[in-house]
Image (cartoon, rainbow, N blue to C red; front, side, top):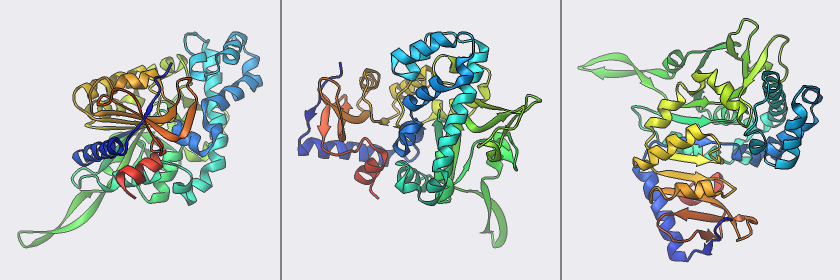
Length: 372
């Protein structure tokens, strides 16, 4: 049972704001780890509960041998990630779950795409946070790392709408191939400078997001020849012979990720070298990522977690050091959530504190802590 919070005094709230503002001032570069929370803020259809219902209703899955046992667990477990953990589905079921999941997320993504491109700040709660982080990047290395297990393209839409350059490591035209070195080469501009009285052109890095989608994406496909390409034109409908590539929830994702270590080829070094972490809407259901963040926190990297649902796993992170903060929706002793309030857990306070503000949400955190 979650430990109930106590109301924070005005002095405690001021001290909390000051402590987090100091961390943000001391560290120019924050790795963003974005889970499904911001996507669910756009639509509950982007959450695991809606995906579970979709999988249970998919006739392509119900016709497969071995699916009935998984369906029974889905019906009783409630939580999709939990239901798909501790089981060993066949390769056919893993492939079918991946395709069904990708098709479902793609449909919802396309429904919200135009609104996101026209006015991201009114839909995606991380919009202003991302803008601020990019604007404060150092000029000599203006790269904002984002690691996400999300399949949707809301981060890409937000970057495009704000005029922020981004790369997912794929280069090319309609069909793009993975090549991080080439993709980074394109994130420069030419600038004229005067050197010893002479004008010359130099390459200057532009501010950009490096987006690492460690569980695949709705716009990533395996071709009939076995090659992998990124293409936005096939998001709505996958051509015959092509398969959407993503890692499904639960233990099955480990097998898929093991066959796509390139997904972590950039994310691993980014996570392992990060000097600070902002974790948004992510519950740490990936042991590999959880272990790296925990080790970095033990080495002194500050961690600020903003997500709706409090868990014992998140509370345990704060035992590492005072530079780890977990902000969630408030809850009482029975676990009932109050999303209009924030539950703050930090080693500097004996009990969780309750704040009568929704600063666990990225948009409110940005305005209240970072400033508009």
